[in-house]
Image (cartoon, helix red, strand yellow):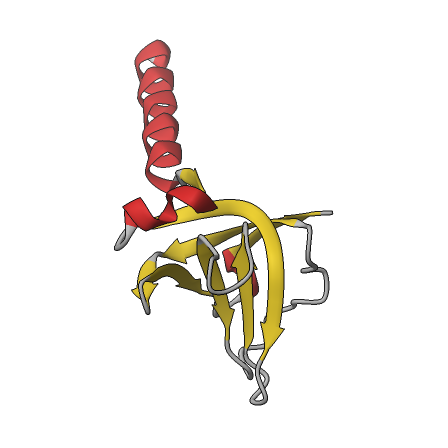
Length: 117
């Protein structure tokens, strides 16, 4: 009986962890995944901050040739202090298309998975 209960618990843990696992793709593959909610990882090529304080992080190349963009709008209280040109950034969210380019709008710190210098 104990073995059956242990097996059921183990199977439940495995199923739950798989349900919450997040697939990761390269920033160069984001264009092929519009509409999906994934982790996107890539090298930051350029950062632009608008007059309104909105931050746009371009991956792999500068605008207009970037492969992917992260948009962080002013007032969202997202810690962007460690995001620098040349770092490798991983973010999580729904990949949307904006002006022909894939992007994720980051609205919370939880969406920033890692920043590698």
